[in-house]
Amino acid sequence: MIRDRMLRFSGSKADVFDQMVGHFSFDDASNVVFWDVFTGSGSVAEAVARHFRNVRIVMNDFDQDLFALHHVVAQGSDHDFQTVLEMLDITPTIERFREVLEWEPTAYTDRAFRAMFLNRTSDSRASGLRPLGGWKQNGDMRVHKRYRYHRFSARMLERRLLLKGRTMVTGDDFRVVLDAAAITPRSFIYCDPVYPEVGNKLYHNTPKWVDWDHVALRDKLLAMDNRWALSYNDHSLIRFLYSGCEFHPVRMPKSSQGGEKIELLITPKETLGWQEQEIPTGAKSSL
Image (cartoon, rainbow, N blue to C red; front, side, top):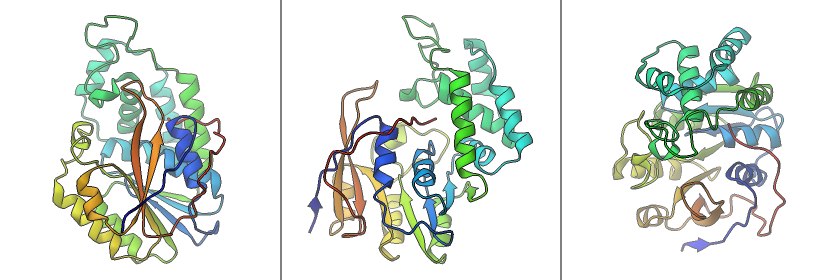
């Protein structure tokens, strides 16, 4: 039987993540491993690191640019981290945006630079394919509008200090990661996969998902014990695949692309100790 329990969190999307992980039910111990299987921006892994100071963390993303960025920040050498910061200390222009977009780097540092540069200069609705303000730069928005180097470089350093020394970063298919998590004692798994219908429009550096990918993820999770949680959009396919699990609708904050929306946090029965109340927001923002 599906049970819906609304989670009422406040603040930005990053604040919601920060509050959400405060309710994950695992011990703060060095022999516990938190697996962020589709790490994306890395906000959930960062929030876990802030709430649980001893837990080891695995961050995974099949997007090789994001993998490189998180690897440099959370696991890379001081030299590589400083190299990326120096590369990012520039003024974005349309010409530079086009060059970075067409570039095909192979080194970790180059890929990390490209991931962060496009994150700060692109229209999120186009997933890095179009600059802020469009190619003609009409209106108030410009490609450099969100490129606040001193702010995001300080956030990168803050994240590095939280994660380095207890974090492993991988760039594998989710099946490989979940197989590794399944044989690792005291694991807790969090998944935020490509969403049905809308997800394939947002991610251009990873293979498109079909229904069988969602089925494969479901089968992997249900074959494990109850120490997992995942986020999805509220879609009929997902409600069918996870019927019998706990459905926790989460009201996400307003974005520049529209109003508030409801996403689902899905857990196996009563795995998480949710508190159904308004929780004061933190003051953190994502990269």
